Length: 178
Image 1: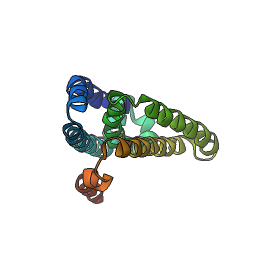
Image 2: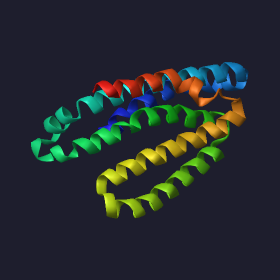
Image 3: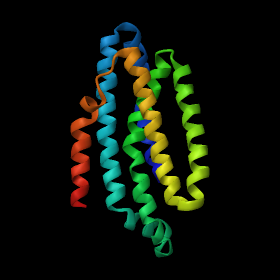
Image 4: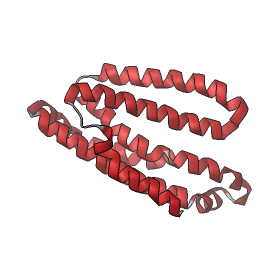
């Protein structure tokens, strides 16, 4: 389910790939503004998807798999946190490729893969599938952090709290009402 939802930023970024490429090479300030807007909008869409999956996880599990799998509800709720992280990271990864900095995207991907392998080997024997879900969240946050780090030096992105601050804060507050 999470993978299916992740097609949303893929479709958006593929549709905007020519625009991203041309703006990056014509005006770095235009590209920077476009990246920041896309990141924020994808983050907001990701928050909405996350909130929906989290709120209706019981219904999703029961409808798709039956009541026998109700023990998976908490795992789906954990995995729903991945959605806004990956939505935001997707467009930043595309920008690294567009800017001819795909080597930094590769560094981030290899580092994340190694982190995931090692952390899963340590965590899964003790915490099972919930531990694997937490490792996935941690790995995605790590990858997003590396993308932001590489892009801040490349196109001087605004600080993360300016891009994701208000939507992120609103999202965290909304979980208090679930």
